[in-house]
Length: 264
Image 1 (cartoon, rainbow, N blue to C red):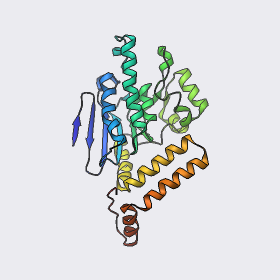
Image 2: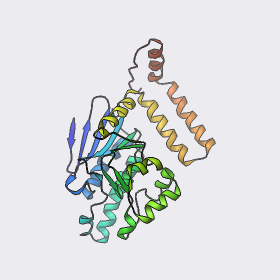
Image 3: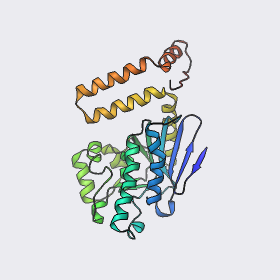
Image 4: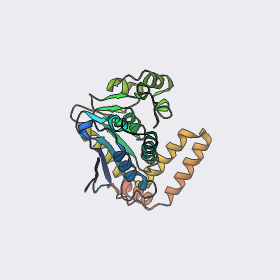
């Protein structure tokens, strides 16, 4: 089932996969106010009620751009109040993605600049095409990164590499992004979505409660000390012992068959 918004496409598949696609290829999938609001409308409800969604893929239309950041032509017409309001819409989308209980895989099919790169930071991991390029360019436009470029990026690629990217505002290629840990894998030419869908299908086939608890535990571990992290992980683990999926997983293994998980 495909649901079409004005600026994005949302496709839901029977196996629990959802594909969200930036759909403004004529402007390199730049984010205008409508796109920011629509992304928030998709992800905000998922924080408490993801329903049958087990994994999300975030990508862009075409082969030139994942997302080139904010729509600067639109922003050139904004007054200060409109700029603040738009940024709040963007923050709603970013925070909703960061709090999404199911995994989000980013498939970077072209340039990921400024806010586009920051969108990748709200995902759990990223695959990219060989021609993908990444940049965090805000300081070259009189502003600064406001959606994770100075708060999340240093934790992903290291402080020194992040300072180079942010302060020089120069793009890096896919190979450098892989070396620095910004992406997990460079896919073969023309194979990006095929390879991303393959790993998304693997996630969708696993026990939904287990995936959610494991993701939550790893997210918490990033922000607390080791002992607190371990205690949280143990609590998350103990909740799974009482699930029907835990019983099904053990039975399926011993009966030498694929498990049928129900998220209960």
